[in-house]
Structure formats: structure tokens, C-alpha cells
Length: 452
Image 1 (cartoon, helix red, strand yellow):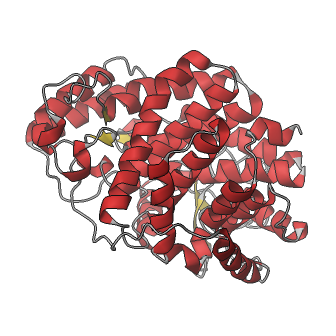
Image 2 (tube, helix red, strand yellow):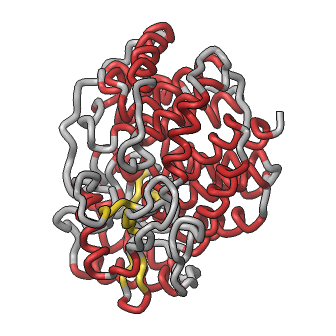
């Protein structure tokens, strides 16, 4: 999920035009009209609101309660794979660095540990991909801080990315070569990286880098906490500066990733600039897109659309109105962002904003959990990790933190585990760490972890 240009549109021309107007307002930096435009767009889309471009092929749900011992067994197998890691090419934050993140989550219980030298090597590999004055020449008009997408090393193709990310990198580096500087130092000196994705001069408003930026920020924060090395904190803060400058986009899951990253930094540091910016994004861009029923009249708030007239999971509050944002993958990212924002506000004592946000966060996670429990899981590779991460993150930051059980969320976590996808480890190792943290640890915020 690195671009908002996906799928054949189910939207009518007026809806497409409304989305263009919304993007123009987002790009202007003045989001005040976005909520009213969102409500108009929901009315225009009508009974199609909340319906995605296509339906996934679900696997049958199995709600049998999972056994912690089974998670531990699979975790140990995943760690046997991780200890053989060696530095080769640059890796995306969702690859080996995500396994490292899983280790930090599991290690909060202090029963699970991996060689700290290995973790430091992985963290440094990721940090070496950050666009900064120490790694590359920062041109005027470009914001440092992005964890770049590798394009290539001059004369070599062996480390090129693949799939959708490769297409984004190739297109942007060929069209805007100045956005793909060659790094001058660090582990990847000589490699070119895509380090920018929005180009005001030619009115290009996409945000593909944002998809991986939350992962990178969280990995740098947890590396700072787990390895007690302030260089990783510096990298996380620099990434936060990049997020503060990135414009929101109508592909809301990408903006949601920046909300999650800024929330993590606010949770850790308490700096008001992070809270103020993510709250602006949340209140004016994300919340208006979520179909809610806060007054319990079974109508989508702000419209005359009955929830009972909407398709499948859209008939339950907590879904996003627009087709490309209505998939379980996209909604799980937005839900995760709201959970992180809510938890950061709660833990930092901003009870008024937290109270506004909580019903939205819970509705999105409950909507996703209802889909999983009733219909089953999407195939591996269709956002399975993000969906699993979102639900496990909510169990940790709401259920465990507030000592309040959401049985539906627990059942969804069991269905996800029983699908068998997570047992393969690999990119899902981070979720294994979340399960172990949830089973074995008392809740701590990032601030508490950094200052025990």
C-alpha cells in the first residue's frame, strides 16, 4: 500500500470530483473545509459508502482460543531464523527491522531475548537509510528525515526493490531525479534512495513513503529504549520533522501512518508540536471519513443513510466511506493510528481529546474484528500483517492498559492466529512479539519504558 491510485473506481463522477476538491484542500494546508466535504461525499456515494473496490477471498474463521505455549514455540523458530541475518542490501522497515521490533515487544517481559549486537546491527542498517545531512546532500526545498526507498547503486541492480514499491521508486526517480540522491556515507554510500514523494511545483500529492515511516519511527524508538542508544532517538525525531511537513492525502491510510508516528513521538517525548499536528490531521481529515453512529439512531452521522442499507461490514459503525480506504487493510491502518493517538493522549493526561477519540478507535477495531470473526481472514499478503498488528495493538493499548476486555477483539486475535499465516514467521514476526507482550507483560507506555 504505497499509492492511492489503486483499483478500478466504483465512484460516480461527482464523487471523483469531490475527492479532488478534498485533496486540494488538504494540499493547501487549510483543512477546515475537509469535514463538510467528506460528509457531502458520503451523501453522494450513498448506499455504496463503505464498500471497497473488491471483496477478498476469506478463509473460514476458527475462533478456538489460542494457546500461549504455541505462540512461544513458533516464536522460538522465528528467532532461529533471525540470528542467521547478515547485512547485505538495504531493507524496508517491514522486513528484518520489523522482526527486530517484535523482539523489543516480546522482551518487555524479559523472558525472551536476542543478542544485542544483532539488534544493533539491524537498527543501524535501518538508520543508515535515513536521508540526513550526514548521509546525503540535502537540497533546498527538500525535508530531511525520510527513510528512503533504495533505487539502485550506480552500475548495480542487485539491491533493487520489487513490486509496487519498485514501481513507485522508478517512476519518481526518473521523473524527479533530484528526489533520489546518492548517499555519501554510511552502510549504503553510493546507493540512490527516493527521499521525497510530494512535489508542489507539479501538483503531485501522493505519500507512498508514509506507509513505511511509522514502522521506521517505532523501530527507532524501540531501539533507543531497548539498546539505550540516543542516536536512534535522534533518527526518530528527525523522521518526526519529515512527518510534520508531509501533506495529508485522500488515501487516508498513508496519512494515518504519519498520525501513528507523531503519536508515538508525543507518547515518548510529550512535545506539544507532535500532538497539535496529529490532532489537526485526526480531527479534520480522519474522523470525518469514518461512518459512525454516535447518537445511536442507526443513521450514518451527519447523513440520512441508514446503516442497515449498507453492505456487509459497512453496516456496522467504524468503516471509512471511500472505496480505496474501505478495505480491511486500509481500515486497519487508520484504526491503528487512532488507537496510538488515543493512548498517547490518555497517557499524557489529555483526557478531553482522548474522550473524543476513544469511541472512533474502538469502533474501527470492533468493525474489523466483526469482519474477521464473521467472515474469516484475507489472504496472506493482502494487508494481513497490518490487520493483525492493528488488533493486537488495540488489545495491548486499550484492553491491557485499561484492564477492560473486548471479547470480540480477543476472538478476532484467535481467528488470525488459527489461520496459520502468522506461524510462518518472517514479516509477521513482529505480530508474534505482540502476542507474547500481550500474554506476558503489564502495560507500559513508551515514556515509561524510556524512563523506568
